[in-house]
Image: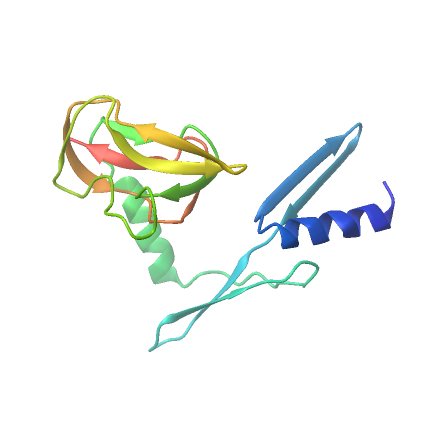
Length: 156
Protein backbone atom coordinates (compact mmCIF):
# COMPACT_ATOMS: atom_id res chain seq x y z
CA UNK A 1 0.00 0.00 0.00
CA UNK A 2 1.39 3.36 -1.04
CA UNK A 3 1.40 6.51 1.11
CA UNK A 4 -1.03 8.17 -1.32
CA UNK A 5 -3.52 5.33 -0.69
CA UNK A 6 -3.21 5.89 3.06
CA UNK A 7 -3.79 9.63 2.63
CA UNK A 8 -6.89 8.95 0.52
CA UNK A 9 -8.21 6.64 3.26
CA UNK A 10 -7.60 9.32 5.91
CA UNK A 11 -9.49 11.87 3.83
CA UNK A 12 -12.38 9.43 3.27
CA UNK A 13 -12.61 8.73 7.01
CA UNK A 14 -12.69 12.46 7.74
CA UNK A 15 -15.19 13.33 4.99
CA UNK A 16 -17.64 10.58 5.96
CA UNK A 17 -17.68 11.43 9.66
CA UNK A 18 -16.20 8.08 10.72
CA UNK A 19 -14.41 7.95 14.06
CA UNK A 20 -12.62 4.63 13.46
CA UNK A 21 -11.46 2.62 10.47
CA UNK A 22 -9.43 -0.59 10.36
CA UNK A 23 -8.08 -2.30 7.26
CA UNK A 24 -6.35 -5.68 7.21
CA UNK A 25 -4.76 -6.75 3.95
CA UNK A 26 -2.31 -9.65 4.04
CA UNK A 27 0.30 -8.84 6.67
CA UNK A 28 -0.67 -5.11 6.69
CA UNK A 29 -2.96 -3.82 9.41
CA UNK A 30 -3.94 -0.13 9.23
CA UNK A 31 -6.05 1.52 11.91
CA UNK A 32 -7.22 5.15 11.63
CA UNK A 33 -8.95 6.79 14.59
CA UNK A 34 -10.37 10.30 14.94
CA UNK A 35 -10.47 11.39 18.56
CA UNK A 36 -11.89 14.26 20.51
CA UNK A 37 -9.42 16.33 22.44
CA UNK A 38 -10.71 16.92 25.94
CA UNK A 39 -9.33 19.77 28.01
CA UNK A 40 -10.37 19.97 31.66
CA UNK A 41 -10.03 23.32 33.37
CA UNK A 42 -9.57 23.19 37.14
CA UNK A 43 -12.56 25.44 37.89
CA UNK A 44 -14.44 25.34 34.60
CA UNK A 45 -16.26 23.06 32.22
CA UNK A 46 -14.86 20.35 29.97
CA UNK A 47 -13.98 21.67 26.52
CA UNK A 48 -14.00 19.32 23.51
CA UNK A 49 -12.54 19.88 20.07
CA UNK A 50 -12.69 17.55 17.08
CA UNK A 51 -9.24 16.55 15.87
CA UNK A 52 -8.77 16.75 12.13
CA UNK A 53 -7.40 13.80 10.15
CA UNK A 54 -3.63 13.79 10.07
CA UNK A 55 -3.37 16.11 13.06
CA UNK A 56 -1.06 15.02 15.87
CA UNK A 57 -2.71 14.61 19.26
CA UNK A 58 -0.81 14.30 22.50
CA UNK A 59 -2.59 12.08 25.00
CA UNK A 60 -2.81 13.53 28.50
CA UNK A 61 -3.56 11.30 31.48
CA UNK A 62 -6.92 12.05 33.12
CA UNK A 63 -7.06 13.68 36.54
CA UNK A 64 -7.14 11.12 39.39
CA UNK A 65 -10.66 12.20 40.44
CA UNK A 66 -12.02 11.42 36.97
CA UNK A 67 -10.25 8.06 36.88
CA UNK A 68 -11.58 7.12 40.33
CA UNK A 69 -15.13 8.09 39.32
CA UNK A 70 -14.97 5.97 36.17
CA UNK A 71 -13.55 3.02 38.11
CA UNK A 72 -16.28 3.43 40.75
CA UNK A 73 -18.97 3.26 38.08
CA UNK A 74 -17.69 -0.13 36.89
CA UNK A 75 -17.29 -1.49 40.44
CA UNK A 76 -20.77 -0.19 41.33
CA UNK A 77 -22.41 -2.83 39.13
CA UNK A 78 -24.00 -4.97 41.84
CA UNK A 79 -26.89 -6.54 39.91
CA UNK A 80 -26.40 -9.71 37.93
CA UNK A 81 -28.96 -8.47 35.39
CA UNK A 82 -26.74 -6.47 33.06
CA UNK A 83 -27.57 -5.65 29.45
CA UNK A 84 -24.24 -5.39 27.62
CA UNK A 85 -23.37 -4.02 24.20
CA UNK A 86 -23.43 -6.75 21.55
CA UNK A 87 -21.15 -4.75 19.23
CA UNK A 88 -18.91 -1.70 18.91
CA UNK A 89 -20.65 1.49 17.83
CA UNK A 90 -22.37 4.70 18.94
CA UNK A 91 -25.09 4.35 21.59
CA UNK A 92 -28.31 6.36 21.30
CA UNK A 93 -30.94 6.43 24.05
CA UNK A 94 -33.75 7.63 21.74
CA UNK A 95 -35.00 6.98 18.20
CA UNK A 96 -34.22 10.57 17.15
CA UNK A 97 -32.61 13.62 18.78
CA UNK A 98 -35.98 15.28 19.46
CA UNK A 99 -37.83 12.20 20.79
CA UNK A 100 -38.02 10.94 24.37
CA UNK A 101 -35.52 8.31 25.59
CA UNK A 102 -36.59 4.68 25.26
CA UNK A 103 -36.20 4.19 29.03
CA UNK A 104 -35.25 6.19 32.11
CA UNK A 105 -33.97 5.06 35.51
CA UNK A 106 -36.89 3.64 37.47
CA UNK A 107 -38.93 2.61 34.41
CA UNK A 108 -40.36 -0.93 34.42
CA UNK A 109 -39.15 -3.02 31.47
CA UNK A 110 -40.11 -6.35 29.94
CA UNK A 111 -38.00 -8.91 28.14
CA UNK A 112 -37.68 -7.90 24.46
CA UNK A 113 -38.40 -4.19 25.07
CA UNK A 114 -36.10 -1.78 23.20
CA UNK A 115 -33.71 0.01 25.59
CA UNK A 116 -31.54 1.87 23.08
CA UNK A 117 -29.88 1.80 19.69
CA UNK A 118 -26.28 1.20 18.65
CA UNK A 119 -25.21 2.58 15.30
CA UNK A 120 -22.47 0.57 13.63
CA UNK A 121 -21.40 1.14 10.02
CA UNK A 122 -24.49 3.29 9.33
CA UNK A 123 -26.81 0.49 10.54
CA UNK A 124 -29.11 1.04 13.52
CA UNK A 125 -29.22 -1.98 15.87
CA UNK A 126 -31.91 -2.06 18.56
CA UNK A 127 -30.75 -3.16 22.01
CA UNK A 128 -33.50 -5.24 23.60
CA UNK A 129 -33.90 -5.98 27.30
CA UNK A 130 -33.01 -9.53 28.27
CA UNK A 131 -34.92 -9.43 31.58
CA UNK A 132 -38.19 -8.37 33.18
CA UNK A 133 -37.64 -5.77 35.90
CA UNK A 134 -36.92 -2.10 36.56
CA UNK A 135 -34.10 0.00 35.08
CA UNK A 136 -31.71 0.53 37.98
CA UNK A 137 -28.99 2.40 36.07
CA UNK A 138 -28.12 3.55 32.57
CA UNK A 139 -24.37 3.09 32.23
CA UNK A 140 -23.81 4.75 28.82
CA UNK A 141 -24.58 8.31 27.79
CA UNK A 142 -26.34 9.36 24.61
CA UNK A 143 -23.94 9.37 21.63
CA UNK A 144 -21.19 7.58 23.61
CA UNK A 145 -18.94 5.21 21.69
CA UNK A 146 -19.38 1.78 23.29
CA UNK A 147 -17.28 -1.36 23.09
CA UNK A 148 -18.32 -4.97 22.67
CA UNK A 149 -19.43 -6.38 26.05
CA UNK A 150 -19.55 -2.97 27.74
CA UNK A 151 -22.39 -2.80 30.33
CA UNK A 152 -25.15 -0.44 29.12
CA UNK A 153 -28.03 -1.02 31.55
CA UNK A 154 -28.46 -2.50 34.99
CA UNK A 155 -31.86 -4.10 35.64
CA UNK A 156 -33.17 -5.11 39.06
